[in-house]
Image (tube, rainbow, N blue to C red):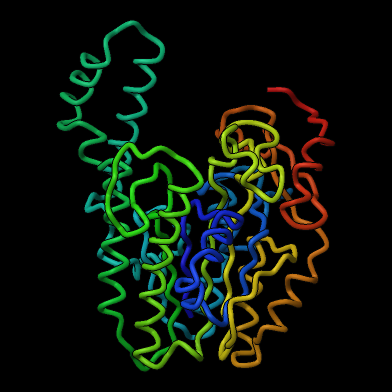
Length: 385
């Protein structure tokens, strides 16, 4: 069983890119592609626990810390462990809400070779520098020098830029694919990759171009290259003879902020730019979800049905309980059984308002992502922050 979470992989953009590339499209034969799937949150940290647990903020879990802790105890990872699966996880940092048992199986090939305490210190130092620069007249060079003196290093240099992280993500997936081997036990492979995350770095051919303009063409090209990397992993599974019988899920965690760009507003099949910039745009809630049930064949099917990222756990549960009986019809039944999607909104432009349940509001959206802009237009926030 394989679950690849590809950060910032937007469904509508990927559908356009894949349908224009017949060679890439054929790499995903047998998949159901929910191109209009919906995320409950517009940011990774909040979407990830929802993907894993299938649950939301509620009366018991009112803060992000509580939601994250609940996902450590109760998620599809723990479901798989309870069914006797070995767990193999891979992430670019130790941010996955994993239990202590699962965390022990986190790949040693972390993108960052920095221990947790040091990483936390560096992240704090980076935000301290940003805050001081924003709220004082002290030149940025002096602030960086002072903070770096106390930390013993420049935070962003030691952490690595997002550009470097994307290259590490690509390289790590390639190494993992080439080294993938079989064992006697059932396994769940769960991975978080950031090759498709902004800013655009990779060309369609894998060439690296820093400071690339973010456009539908450049994002689509990077998506194609990213999916070619995932396809290489699928080919390795075929060579090992495990592809046909395996459940494979490729999921985004939210959409791309290109949705909010005025220059790209005509490039989406729904009003992706409504109602604001970055995480406030409807397109930021449009995650791609591709599912290949065991023994599924035929050309990739683009499915318009409503699908929520919280349904990922239901699909995994179907496979764990039914194994080969978890077929395309079973997955479609999960999708078609969803009457509405829960989406969390904040009237503030700050993503930090998703940390506490009293700073954002849930709304119910009937249908797929195309229905979200209308729901946003009808939303009357009780709070104005």
